[in-house]
Image (cartoon, rainbow, N blue to C red):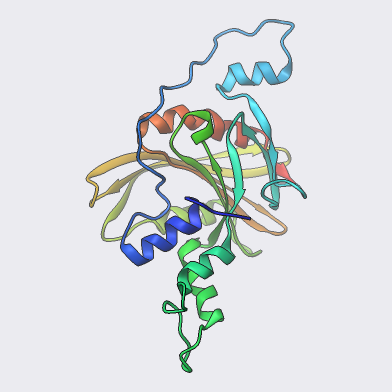
Length: 248
């Protein structure tokens, strides 16, 4: 597993340089996808789904052998590229080329400390980032990210509320949260749409996330984006993932 400008690299850079964490890149936004209003009777199910949600299927992830092995599986939009987050790479970035970032009492590299730091950088509330699906190959700037947690007694609503609340800081505020229940593939989950305001960047952006619980622990999917235009253009991919969500 490799992470170039993926989550691990961005997160460690955030810790070292004060850059943004888990907010994607900045670039020229691509135009919103057009949604077809009609589907011919002879169209395939995939074509109908593409018209209905504005995003054709590009395969699925979550099952054994896929780009990201998860407690759940779901379909990704055409041309979106999934990649497992390289926690080992994050640990290496924390320690630095000579172990300066995580030294033990004897002056050597403390691998356990490096692992703890890397895990904390990837954590948001009760879950940790394990996979990201990049929209850039499809012409958009943003990611659909997957977070997982340890098994427990918390329901999906509790997990999702904790996930959103974990974003709040002196620099970030959350407003206008709207929670809804959904069902898909035998799973009952909760989704939320909310506004995230960055005081540093002086901007407010729309966000969407959902959570389900499984025997292997909770799973959260989060969609951000460069700006509201990009977020709107990528929403069909989020809806596709939600509609096809099932246990893996």
